[in-house]
Length: 249
Image (tube, rainbow, N blue to C red; front, side, top):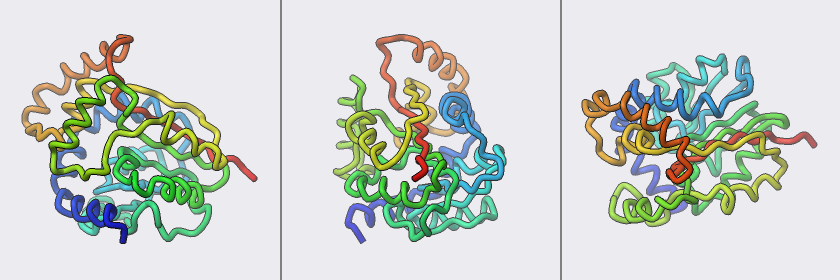
């Protein structure tokens, strides 16, 4: 196994319980519903076969199920996969996103929330694999931390200092690193930029070691600030969310 991928597997095996605690909580879920999922998912999911890729314990699966999707998970961590199956009573395949083992054109939609920037050493293989297992007409949804913002220099320092992150990890540029993969045979349906203080404190609470009790106290005020900052032209946009549709033929 690729050394980077093995390191990721070991990391997420160790963090499985913490990940569920921090990102399956009602405050992170409320943030994602309001600021990420609402703007991103504009198309019907009911009855579609959807892969929650790099799923962890299924933080996004509840939303997908609420939209009527038929969901399965994919995660490199056996501990995450077991937690996923225990929580949702749905299958979760233990494989890396760059080598899934699925047959061609299996899924109507694939969703990755914050995973692509963890697999940068195998990004090309990953993007081609996603295209391979997505049906023509299917939609690839993804959300990632945005490299193309003035605040990214601080994020780079954080990633270097925090031993949770490997040397290869960083935020990702939509324009420079990802958009070129539209040439595989996708149409960009839409891309949104957002994320400010609530994205950091609520949406990244595990990485920042934010106590869960503190999240409860500050979530609603930070949501109000998030709305205000998103309208200010000078405020950083810390994530992007995009939907690409695979073209037929």
